[in-house]
Length: 183
Image 1 (cartoon, rainbow, N blue to C red):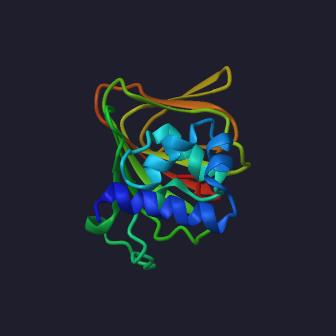
Image 2: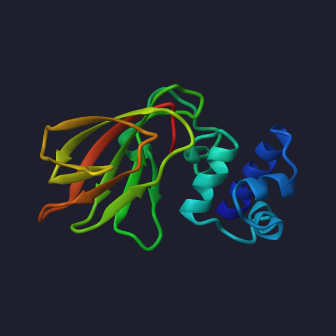
């Protein structure tokens, strides 16, 4: 079974466990039933945006669909971190925390020069703390903008729309801890 098929199976199983029909979930995420069916059968791979919508609709962190279910250990060795490369972007994310069954999620994000990450308003209330490990981070929350450098941190409500940009001349690396898990 390839990765698309594994992801599709997880989505289908969780959808059924949540008592959603294919049509109900498709409507909830503003997609067609046929598109969702193709994803569930491993014939199509959802975009990051579509996967985020599915995860929110099913009240499950996005990483649940991207990690091997057998990996629920408390210790996560650096070389065993789950990695997510966002297609057609200069952003890499590594999950530092262990499992979807936790209340806290921690990940490390690497952003190439000039690249940015935008989060629209989330449908859930949560909290996030970001600390810069390397580079210069520009974050815009509503109309407010902040520049953070190595060692600086910011606490935000995850429900607020925000954009993070690598504002420096070098790769940006930051750690983010959020509750509840939202990735």
